[in-house]
Image (tube, rainbow, N blue to C red; front, side, top):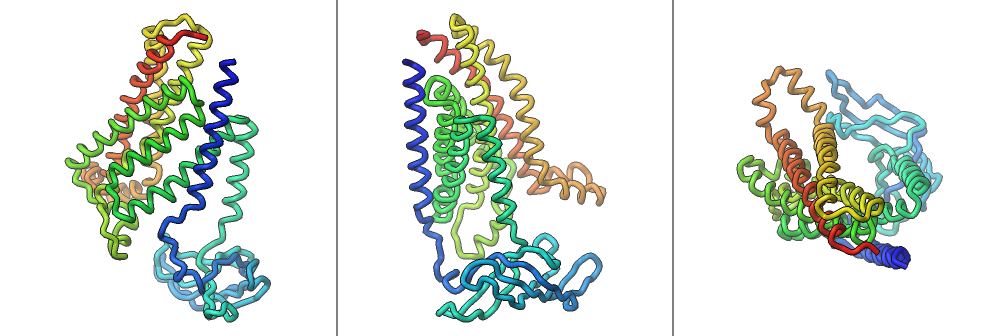
Length: 378
């Protein structure tokens, strides 16, 4: 009877989460701009021919116009073969060169009647197809291995993505206070993810309590540390573009919120792992006292902390391999590197996130011991 009740609660929570997902998916962000796209269409196109005579290579930089003959695939202009343009500005991080057979994302501008094409250019390589294939492989593999738990994991994944896209980002653009908003979104997503994956019960409550405490502690440490680090919010990409677009934003606050939002995923992992371990111990040996469960939780937590903190280091530093290589190639001293703003920002992310892990693990163990050890086994 107990297992049936828990399964029923979990199914109800999955259903409620799906309703929330549908509501967020239909909810406008307030930043849809019809005037920007009413005469502009984005369509997949095949590159048939290229003309590179307008390109010029200076040292390692290529600039100029690449002329393309492309075939539109889909939409009202399906099958049309048109001349398009690909402009290279000498920025290798965003410039691209097409070859025959490539798939491109074409930007088509038309008149107001949408009958006549005014201009067309190749925006970038078309990647939606392979992205969908990889996503499908991920879903199939997850469902094949995890079954209904995989379904809950997918629901939590979609909920988190929509919560960020439909709630966090629009409200930040609206000028909401970044830290309280970031905490609210972190708590909401953690609650849904943990209760979906761990279930609505003692295991979920244990993981949720540990995660909430860890996120709150991480936010406090990040707030205190950021004062001493003196890292401007403009250290993040595109932050200046927002200012130039006319938004009045607390960029430093947004950067601060990003610190504990980034760490919240790892905190969820740690709290969920320890809660699941304590739950399994209790199910195998229901006679264990709260003290014994706590001691076991601490033993489980130690290697989890050690491996996850290293995972954070890999996650944060992996994206800066080229930056580190550039510094090393110039012979920059270590002191110079670690005092560079964007490197200091990643150090802040890593250390603060690791501190959050160090607190989350023992708190989850203590909470799990109290919840499982002091409740009558049924």
